[in-house]
Image (cartoon, rainbow, N blue to C red; front, side, top):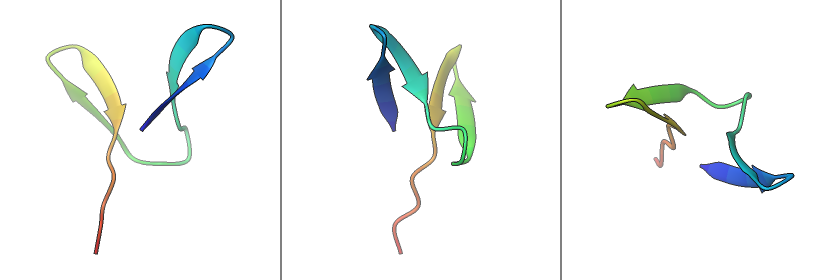
Length: 31
């Protein structure tokens, strides 16, 4: 999950973060 803040993509610091090939994203768990 990413959000645009002041023109920059940001991840949600309250959610788990994964790093894949240098790209940082939030991990979204659906149950």
